[in-house]
Amino acid sequence: MKTKKERLSLILDLVRKHAFGNQEELLKLLHQSGFEVTQATLSRDIKYLKIIKSPDASGNYIYVSSAKNIYSKNKVSDKSGNELTVKGFISLEFSGNLGVIKTRPGYAMGIASDIDGKASHIILGTIAGDDTILIIPREGVEKKAIIEALEFINQQIN
Image (tube, rainbow, N blue to C red):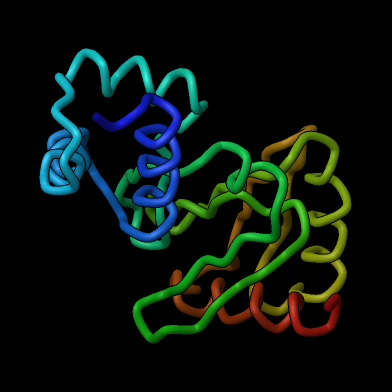
């Protein structure tokens, strides 16, 4: 018989290794690994483990460990495989050409300042709160150019 501790450990491992968009996918892998759990039990485990849904680079929401999401450097990749790794960065999502960066609490203003100072030819400006940055691109600038500018700033910072 498999223990709850083993099940919780496996759930975290699966979430770290796979991009799950829903609980059914995760539940299927748990069953294949020999854990007979219900969807309700899985939901409670997800809440207990503080697993959250967060947007990936293409805007799809996937399950991630909140510890990974909040306390580590994270990467965002565009379709060409370019990556952005910034301390405090959590996610980047677009609505039209406006970008929204989510950060760890207290990081947004510092990151926004770097963006404003180093990407003025691409980005008109930013508005930063404690953990969120609104990116306002110049007229006609596409998402890919914004991501490339952010990658360039990342290389200068790191």
